[in-house]
Image (cartoon, rainbow, N blue to C red; front, side):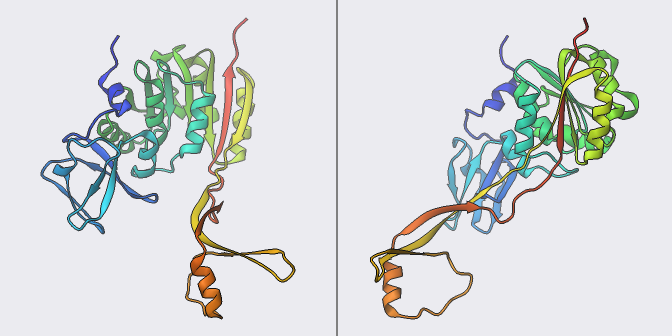
Length: 314
């Protein structure tokens, strides 16, 4: 069997074409998704960029504006799509997503059920994990959210790998057509314990469930329900710590006692008075040094991830 068109697009080993979705990278905290149109232009603080200049260039290219400014054209990978998508609900980010895919043991060819499509952040990564022959069936009770997610999957070329349905999984459970067919199930629901009996029917023997909940009370009640049909129940909290990398001036000189004294000068927020010309010359002569330190604003708690494996029948 040959890979599907969506699987080919997920490899991203190609050049930019008219009609493609690209991620325009201005800086690490400023990116946007743009659909390439030969007659269109992109205007930002760096100048005017003609889409016609992008066509034919490989993804990752540095392109210039009429003013000499530049941006990078990046492929819409699931990781980058998570950073630029429209937030219709609170989303899962890369740290949680990667953990979920590993613990759910998702590989190419898997059939995955998801309830709580939301903005589609996780679902995009699930689609890549099951490609080229697997499929993700995702459900949301909100019809407009489901329609918006369906449009996003069309834009990112994943529509053949993802089917979006409108259904109240808490009240109705998953459709019976998936009974005993799902390799794994992901729940992002306010009352996941109501859907757990249905999940038990959908999973293959030894299949795995993951439930994402922001509150520990939700976790406790879910675990109580899981004990009847599931085993190996585990709950994790993933906390991400990022580092800032910047250039600083490090001045080293011999003190009176023959000891080495080191002064680190971070770029000041305001101009400061420099006491002597000698110290100025010393600072100017010292080469910049690259240093890293933890970010002062770290992403805190997002939610708890509870995993459980369906018991095998004796």
